[in-house]
Length: 220
Length: 184
Ligand SMILES: Cc1cc2nc3c(=O)[nH]c(=O)nc-3n(C[C@H](O)[C@H](O)[C@H](O)COP(=O)(O)OP(=O)(O)OC[C@H]3O[C@@H](n4cnc5c(N)ncnc54)[C@H](O)[C@@H]3O)c2cc1C
Ligand code: SF4
Image 1 (cartoon, each protein chain N blue to C red):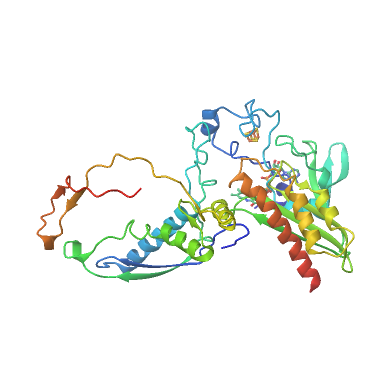
Image 2: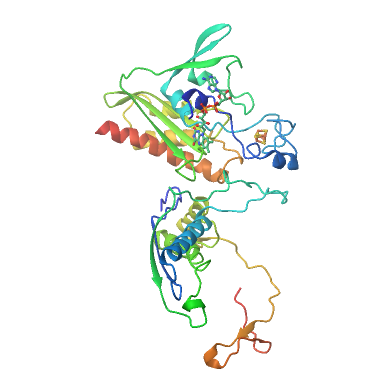
């Protein structure tokens, strides 16, 4: 059995790290554990292991809040501030804090979808996840958030993509502008399944499809 | 076939395999369909990937990242057993091992060509390869993806074994004189 808390705290993944001890030893360990170098980006001072939870980007897009409980008491943090863009220190919580609750915003005209790219629908981790959230006001997009999973060490919100949708009804142009805005900063590294340039290209397609689904659903 | 992503899905494979004589139909069909499964993995996903500039380490030596279809990716299979007994085989049987696997890769490649008009001359037929070929086609270039040349191989002289109706006794004869030109 897996829990929601465990999934939201899921370790970052990398195909140089999620390997047997012998394999990691044979090329020498990387900095995520026991080593000093990053094999994906050898000149980089940081680890680029990939945020691979499907639910985390959705929580960030929804604007969820997490209640953390530790020896110092409890605090509530927005999901977006719970994650860190670092493959090793990927959570901002203290080691002795437990994620006790997840609070979702009440239904007040928002809708959200999640589109996931992976090779096998049955059980592969995402190599790209797109969480799209829209706050509707009639036919107008009052607010919007686009969050990418699987392309960075944290669920990466793309504020420019949300901004491209905001303040008007959805149009083909605004959807395309949001997809383009999400495509540019999407920087997958060569440490998951699939070719990285194809994964980057898919950002545009998947963001478009996610928003299109919201548009279709709202139109009904 | 999704032309925006290059993702290929194979819903059904029809296969007819000449087994000579099917001795245990359930096992024979199991062999055929198991071969389809393995062929489908070879056609679409399975790949020996080595680290770019350090070609000594296999990148994905475990079944988590070495992608093979699971039951959920497996296509439907419609199997026809052709029974044309071989008098030289046990009870007239031929084979049902690797035979039914081999046509899967070319059949999938042909289906991709039939669907979107591009040739992927390399397995696995991954979405990025299909998409690259589609982009080339859009630009009016050669609508294919794959190696551009065939490696130079010192082929041995071919050996020919004459069939029984030509008086063959099972012994091979090396053809030296008119060795046919290999197509590159
Ligand atoms: C083959 C395979 C495929 C998978 N595919 C996917 C996929 O496609 N998408 C996806 O999102 N996930 C995928 N997963 C991951 C799976 O969803 C997570 O492993 C699971 O959700 C973790 O939950 P758990 O309760 O077992 O957590 P654990 O594994 O027990 O915990 C994970 C981490 O979180 C910490 N933790 C757990 N609960 C809390 C808490 N309440 N507060 C603070 N820290 C906590 C633990 O200490 C640990 O560091 C896959 C896993 C496997 C093995
Ligand atoms: S990104 Fe680099 S440091 Fe991090 S796990 Fe992969 S190889 Fe190791």
